[in-house]
Image (cartoon, rainbow over all chains, first blue to last red):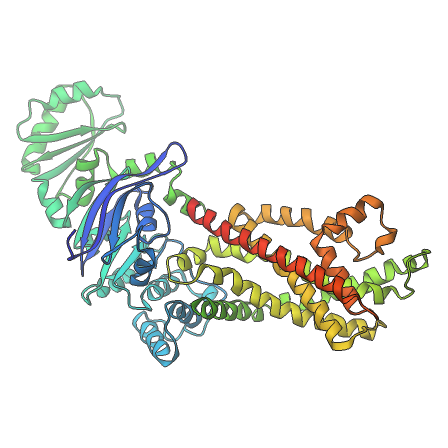
Length: 336
Length: 257
């Protein structure tokens, strides 16, 4: 295991009950001092991963090191080294912002003037200086989320876990939150960020792992992952009449330069082409020749959605609706 | 050391939260007054039953109300724990270096402090309406200790149940199910010799009854100190058992995460 990695997870496995496999051999590593994204739909196993790495849950199999300490053999050392911002947050709503931060610091053995100074600093940094004396119950969603992150940082952890930090926030507040998170990296802090927002991973993570059904299906920087998909993405929505997949594939076999054809159950056709604009007319002609009606066509530069489609074999939206019903940690969170 | 420090921090947290709920304070002060005056008036005639032994029912009832109030309050100790679970507060502490035991002992410490104050207020009120407490300060102190011991034990049970079932409705049902039968199968309202035989037997195994008997004896002239010490010992043992249960429940909770 390399010392330059802040997190190393090897073959993590975890099941809930008989039939829900949350993690199915998850392996990834996070270089120290970077923001690393775990990207995947709800139910992919991201929250379970965070719970295991933060010593809250026990894995059924596999091993992991966080900040150089083994999560199973040295959980106490791991807890001293990490800050955790869970989906539920963990703030005491009946206490003030300052009291929340104070208790968090005290639990880590801080106290006195040093702790109060640290609290001032964090309230300032997260634009909560005026709200520090108010009860958290009165905070807006965005303010609570900022206090959540401040709470995770009180004791200056080496590794910060942010589990879905912007879920449930309106777009404007989410953009503000992104600014806060972007500012965190750089000071030697390693951040593990889980998200099911593609843009969020794209914006914030230097490196990311795409998780699907409890496994890492792709890993790399967002740009490198997108670059792997040479050419443009073509998405075609076929008309109302049900078209057999075989007929579609046969029609497209005659088109040059068309790759990675996927036809899903919503009559959506996804494909990849070196030069999208030039290939589309040929595709349309081929479909027309086979009497297949086309309802809509889009051509786009590759996005993380396309990366996901390529590695997980389905679109992000499909994965969300298919796996959302599985009883996993993400889902349990959502029902609370 | 760390356990003590963490307990202190948690105690401060709970006391601050209580202090901010004036309604809670008001209700928890008014409720024992209602017990004392209502039951005092309702059952006044039981002193006429031959063999009851006392002719001042308020006098008889007051120590029982002190213990019962602590017991009733403690039954709900698990409710804020469920709220903490739902808001992720428990999980946040479990991934920090905080001593696990302080999450329980902090609640018990803050609760014991408020119970002591509440008990004192009931004693003063009982004095005003005509009760008297023998053995003065020592007797009242022992009475309050018994109330806190039995309350802390049931508080641990409630917290343990909360961690296991994690549903407010279920906890409410469980507490309701236990509280009234245990209260009536004790000498809180009635002289033991006047209870049906089977109920007398049950009450021998009822921790609430141990506390009421020991507490009442402590404020009665010519107490049997040996019997009081014995029942206090039983209560301490019961508290240890319940504390152990609550700690085990923590482990079970964490395994279910």
